[in-house]
Image 1: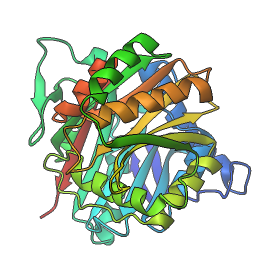
Image 2: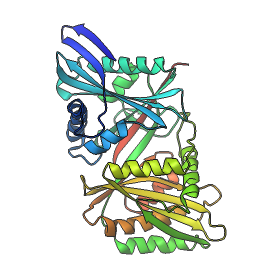
Image 3: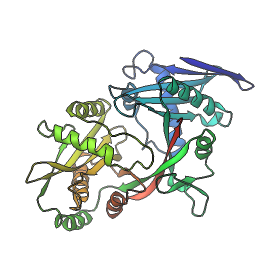
Length: 369
């Protein structure tokens, strides 16, 4: 698939490119150009690669899977790579939605190239009967200047700066801001005195529960229960007005996520709270780590299932995992997490653990019907 536009700027081609089977396979040079734009963007915006996937991760992710089809695009101006786009198409749930993302090299911005890339992505999505387009933009906390104008989320809590290029681009193309997430970071290691104090406070409310965990693979006897928790996570996480359907997780989907992480150089550790009387898994949290960025640990999902809330289980599982980090990945110096602004309970846990805001994500949506 290719689309082209001619202008005084030259001739721009937007082409879908193949995702190689590995970083050294046939077609990899194009994909490396695609990935290098992502690397340059993160270095320009954040000054580091803490939030950027590695090349190996990117190859595996953009190959897609049985649950989501994924496509990548390069924009070339007279043969020179000037931008990229991505299109994700859910296949099991949310089959009327599409995820879109546009990135233009800093030297080629404000020339309409981003709009042309987005037009290609939206056209492809419409051809697949998608009527709702989702996008998100991550930016540093320094852009949230006190007293500056904010665009408030349409259905969630919080807002994004009105004067950023990303906000102007999204509004110009008919997207509405539905939700804002806070990106928070905490130095490692966490002081044991703080962990003990918080653990003692939580334990008084958690009688009848035990905290257990694993690294890199969920035990076979727990994987079905863990999959059920993952399904609950997809419906219980705040989504403001985005209207996403819940995901159906089973053991096969859990194993696919695990194998993809490991193949991409991602190690992980999970901590879960188990209800002693029933053996049911009541809460979980997951941390991931990449050897390519050894200083950073990512806080993935955290959930306490309905019916088990009010026992401080979210705090207990997070404490267990943070302790494990210091043994598993001693080179780690920070842990990073994301929370919807309206998720006050989980934000309070993170604040108590010493997390401080470092960035924000705007979650945008455009509906055709």
